[in-house]
Length: 131
Image 1 (cartoon, rainbow, N blue to C red):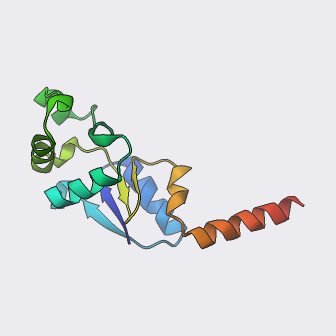
Image 2 (spheres, rainbow, N blue to C red):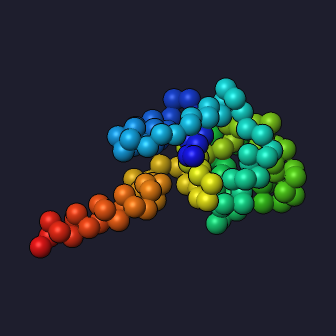
């Protein structure tokens, strides 16, 4: 199952949801500003992250600018507590499956959410078309 954590009025979130629709991949949309995020959800995201906490924070958000917190100096518990209380700090979309995560919309890397068998078939068809 794939969950797309979205923010209201985000063109990147709309692009991600449309991409999945166009590829006929069923996803669950989780609206961050309406539903929020639990500590358990955030911890799951962080376990899948290769870059740690810094890739999750939207440094261009108004709330980030107002808070003036050095997130690098926070403990893990402090970080999760602040982010869960202020989900507008998160970059969006956050696309997550059981074994992978993507922060933001990237049209190349989002393809990794296509099931492997389908990716292999697409590659075979592309190679056959070349010859």
